[in-house]
Length: 74
Image 1: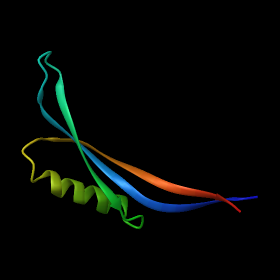
Image 2: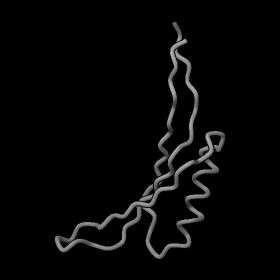
Image 3: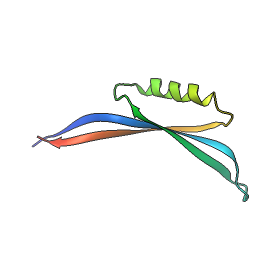
């Protein structure tokens, strides 16, 4: 039997440095956006994340895209 993949919604997570800890390390905060369309391209998703981060006073550290898949055995 073959396994079939069905792309579901994804989660976009951005990480920002909001300051420093008392020990001197970076203080990191995350923001997530759920229900990213499975048909959205990686470039479009990154462009949206960059545009949203430009509204923040904190520097954007990275962008993470978590994709969800449904696997069925047919």
